[in-house]
Image (cartoon, rainbow, N blue to C red; front, top):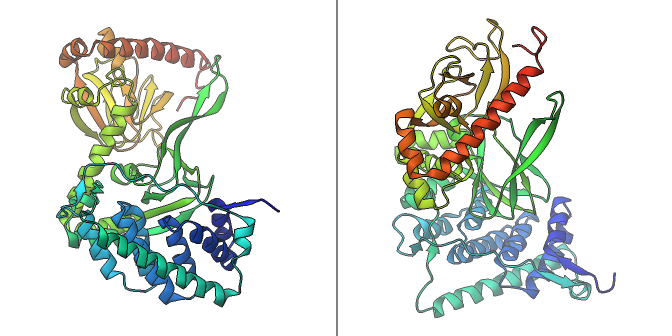
Amino acid sequence: MQGMTIDYDQLQELIKEGKLIEALRMGLALFRDNTSNVNLWFEVANLCLQLDDRKTGVEGLIGAGRELAENGNLPMAIVCIRTIEEAGEDAGELTRHVSALFGKDSNRVRNRAMPVPPLPSTVDEATLAQVKGDKAALLAGAARVLMQADEGAKLASAMRSVHPPVPYFPLFGMLSADNFTQLVSCFSPKRFYRDELLIKQGDASSDFYLVARGEVKVFIAEKIQDEGGMTQQMRFKHVATLGPGTFVGEMGIVARTPRSANVQAVSGGTLLGASLESIEKLAAEIPEVADIIVAYCEVRLLENVMAASPILLPIESEDERAAALRHFERLYVPSGNIIIREGQPASGIYVVVSGEVGVTKLGAPPDGVSLKDSQTGKMIFITALSSGDIVGEISTVMKKPATATVHAITDTSLLFLPKERFMEFTKTYPGVFQRIYEIVESREEDIAKILSTKAAPGDDLL
């Protein structure tokens, strides 16, 4: 064991295993060696609270929350607030301070990035061995270290001639102090651990999360067919790696659709989770909150489409993509309704913003009837498409009737480019036409391949 280093990940493992006294001992060793790491400040204070030293724990969390807020880390400051409140203690003073810093009336908010979290701390075995004692001694030591950290932070703050700006956080930064406090009350902290699956693709959407600490990765599981179209394999597509200050899962809340992707922990960390029920209750009481949440999520939906849709990928500049969107109309199609009918010309090109659409040949369910419930006609299911995918491109580009029917499997939000605007759009963005033409060729080949495998009457027909 000689020369072995102890790090933050090992502290997280002890907390996961419920070894709180050992975790406090390790946390003290790490924090005494690096009192500038406010995340460690939070951990030591939170461990005191869990070990029933409520006074030290609450005072430590208030100090850590204030320092986190002053450093621009709103998510972890909210974790401190909600940890105190969920323990049945008063966090009013800290909440008022945080809302004054980050709400819409703040004079310190600037459009800047969230600060980079401090590097993980490490100590050696010799330093850890110096932290001795039973539970009572460790708690007393924690009280002294937390008090010293608090006094040091207050002194440093008092000596500043100008307080630094804090970053603007969408959603929270749009709210007045009272409404800010109400929204904060909807969130609950949730600790997560390395490799933990936090959101599963296909599950019902019941809550969404703000990453307060740590990293998560977003990936999509999709089935792909082999060259003969006979067997299917699962492929995992990485979408993004997200860190502190980012939301995950909010699209499913607004669109009322199942989870469109998986979210898995890359490291240990903390989420702030809010349930759909709590958000709806707050929105009913305060219409301003409802409007802001919808507006925020609408922007996020469009950002996702702009970043992922093949029709917009050739447009590299974000400003040009925003300008390109002005050529489109917004449409909402309820579940079961037809978007494009086989044999009839498509009205233009559609980009799926949220929800899921199905592509079928040789017919479709009647209007208002879901694909799974329909027992009329014989249909060959081609594929299901979701956010960022396009439909109507074959009919629009080739100027011929639609080769398949497209219907909404779920309630679906779309961007629609009418065919009379298509030529103008592709003249402005010539790279888009080339990309769409490539998609047309690929999709026609895919449809032909799938149909060739269903030669037997009734084979895989719905």
